[in-house]
Length: 182
Image (cartoon, rainbow, N blue to C red; front, side, top):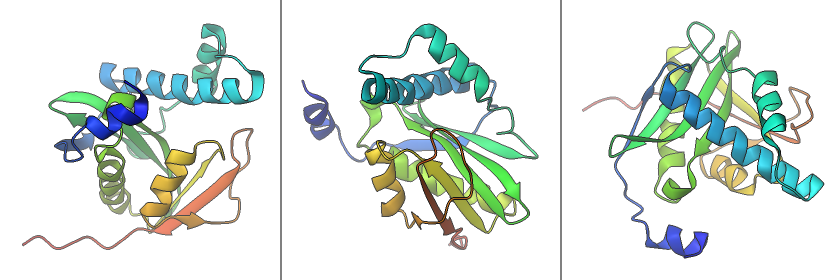
């Protein structure tokens, strides 16, 4: 079955649970490894016509630590369906009113089931708990699915706030007010 056919066959109403998790937990580390593998392979296929090697992946992981995605400088969220960890997203504090969204990933088998939206909703709650009024992010132009997700959830292109070899487009938006319970 093709990826598109598999996404079509999946129910779009999967029951997602998203919660903070220690960025060093086994589930978080496995998700981060899958995230890096996915984005690195996409980059290497586009720019080098091949998959990245295990050595290149290890170097990329080592060169981009995620330990700041923990209190008090950030948070790391894990999304689960039927108790299985299938998605993640991180948030790091940049300044008194701004947090940066990073490491957004949904495993391929769970894509198209609402996980991206569930993650971004939980990120809004996490940003408010960190005192952030604005969320920004950078990404690559070839990550078209991620860019479409951000646009669907109110992010808009902004001027560059960071630099780096993989920062090609920048997005931001204000953190929405909390929805009152009841």
